[in-house]
Length: 635
View 1 (cartoon, rainbow, N blue to C red):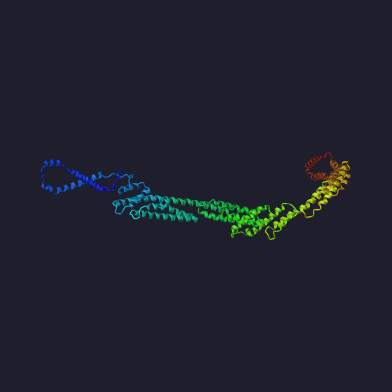
View 2 (cartoon, one colour):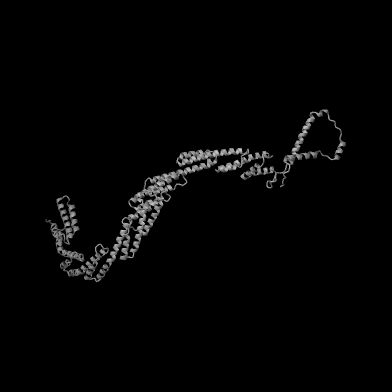
């Protein structure tokens, strides 16, 4: 595109020049033409009336025609539209203004900024200043439209920054100032209502929060009436859900049991951390955690460390009292070491607990646990640690299992004074090691006694008993020694009495039960073979008694078969209670007595002879007795 020099005529000057040149072209003629016209001219005399009003109107018409023709020529000869792609700093301001205005049609901020910067650089008396002011008003409107879209996204400061591109010293800024004031007022009103709605939700006043949300929806700004309104409604719904969940947790916690309190804490922790109701949930979680620790402290009063640990462990790591719960468990373990000093935990494990407790106490400083039962001083813990070190050293020495090393261990443990926390533990170890010394001293007596008893003779057993008897009363091996002595004493008695029992067995086998019984009865009641001998004697006595009493019982059976129930009863009653056949005899007597009573009843009730007789026959048949003969009764 061609470049224009700054000395180029303006469009108005250019039109005037074109008009002048056109007129001169129309009026100029060559000399030959003038000569021909002069020859052809004929004098013309106009009438007198022509020089009045008609002449005046003619002049007017000629003037308007000339002007119109000039204007038409000016329009037809306007310069071409500038090519904004090739514009440079040497281009005239009119072209710069034209191109700047064209660029603003894109609706982007940067072309508008450049357009305002272009006009702002012109002096107040610039020829294009009037057109520029008009354009700036148009550009300001464009910036306001862009800024309003920015406000819709919630960026008030960004919108104000956009319209502040308009210079404040220009008339176009008046509309910008009015727009900014309106935005700020609307924004302030929306922010105020939004804050009130948030405060109402923080106060758990759901109805008031809903009223503010409705007021927000009526604002003439989609950012507040739609976007922020939806935020409030969504938040309100979540807050209500969170409040409902918290109420459910409160219902669970009202039972005040460890399990229900733990469930309540877990349920309350499910509330979204971003909700206002979360503050109340955290407060309740802390209260319920305190209730758990109170229940755990009651277990500590009863010295139930397992129960305390189980309850305190229910306090989760997200609870504000989690550290306190862990410290309570640790202090309870430290306390338990002084309660039950002789426990199943190795000394090294106990020392680890005490070291951890010492570090925790140092970290806690003056912030002790609020439970008197769990309070432990740093001095107590350090004293226990030192005592355990001494006991560990003594235990290592005692592990050699020699009387001398055991005595060294005892001396080391006795260095723990009665006022020390581990005194009981030390004395327990001392007692154990003293027993170990006695065990090592008495072991040779037991070993020698066992060797003597290996001869399996009364003399060897007697010497073994004397050797084991040297273990004094109260010594660790005393029970073992007495057990061996009792065993060897029985072995001697068996060796002494076995011939008597064997002789009795031989007599019994030969059929001489009475002699066998007399022989076995010679074994004393405190002897080792007394019970086996008595068992044999009982069997032999039963055989003898059966042989003596069987004839009596047989005679009774015969009398009963003959119908003499009274005689049968009298005969069987001769067998005494201590006899072998006493049970059989008593069974038969009971049957006969029942049969006799039935017969008597039949005689006393003749109206039912058939039934009574049938019962009697049935009994007789079941008993194996014949009913062919008439029974006779004798008392």
